[in-house]
Length: 240
Length: 365
Image 1: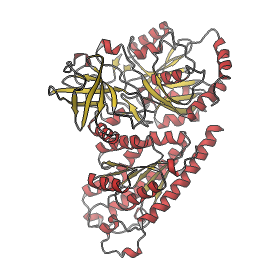
Image 2 (image 1 turned 60 degrees about the vertical axis):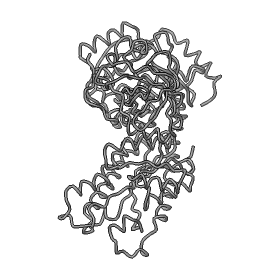
Image 3 (image 1 turned 180 degrees about the vertical axis):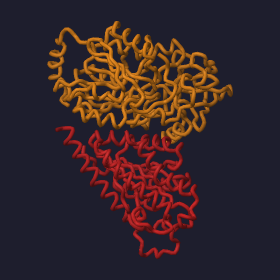
Image 4 (image 1 turned 30 degrees about the horizontal axis):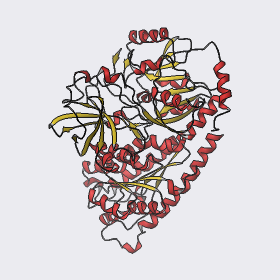
């Protein structure tokens, strides 16, 4: 019953670029069953050409009406779910600007993508994740965070505040869901050479940035470790 | 009793009418469900998520509008969604009570239906002009996207506002296989699951493709429930076995759970893990081998739901239940109040001995 990487069922939001695409590649290479979500059909179709065994789903997690259609398609593609990676993120208004110059609507949009969207999708998929945990498969939710969630960087207000909220949400949810055998973790992958980073800081020296592929490998290793540890703990409970 | 007219999630605001094993009636709030449990009991719920199974579109040969309600299929596999048993209505939507809905155009084998982004064709007409087997002419991923984005939840006229898909998902919703919500599960929220464990009881799930509850046509309604596929996880089968061995009670949340567990125990006195198709009707004649208590919504006498309750209790107790629910204005249907019904006390326990003997012949869990 211990889940080998090759039967893990993994869903990744924001799966067509940067870290998300790196995670799709990493899990697909490890033989996991992968579903990924992104807003634009052309991007989804292009990514499916590169990873033909992964199922691409078109949807915008910041839109309330999209969340259950996304959840239905994830559960149909994977016949359940073991791992959810909430990776899709919005930087807030571009170019980055002080909070005092940030429109309220732009803050709302950042919260919709970085906080409320992951909350909605997680809630819709919680039954499936709890089912995975009861079956001894070890369910894990990973929320991708940032050091901007901790450090008060000027001009990163909308993004930083929404990621800080997501990080705290993760901690509370981890405490509450431990009763269901579900782990919730927030991971800061570090500054990566991704399209999102280029949008935020176009003049950054890319040679100093981490490759998204290596961040994806680290995250996949951590998830593999956690699912095995969880599944053993749950099995001991069931068979006690 | 009157129908609940707005969606409800979780135990808050719902009442629970309790019938004990001697047929005595009492009342609690649904949030107190865990207080009715004993240490060592096992609560089993159906974790099916609800498919948006109502599809509006056009009957291509006549150009006339139709509403197709998906009502059954032979498998839970998400890859096998090309064929469905469906009930077809003519023009209009849920706001017209189903019994007043116009007939669909005459459907013939080979007719095409255009249902938003999905195309389907009639494979068979199943002995009634509105009961039709359809084949969707797309790969599974396209069918799922079409259902997820174009489908609406099946809805009835007593709920006036259009339902959203999230109104029809219970908290523990897992794989999307139900055509209507396994609505007894609305009393389960995450706080209740925690309270169940704190009580020293355990919680497990099955997945059962709950079908439609009403078609508005007496001849069709008489065929309900259709055959329904279900899956019993190995962990659930093990917990049922352990619970029975220790003398604990099995509390089913929803009639679908009774149907699945009792079907799975037909060939063997214990519940075997795996997939099956529940084909039986449970009535006053049925012997319950597994389920000791049932949490269910309230349904009118004569419905298949109500018939199933007769396997648990004598008619006089059920009449008392209905009278009490009427007197206290309990709300019926999927978003309404609930009953916690005990299996009537039996004079003899001989079948328990027989069960123990048979269990020795069955495969080990």
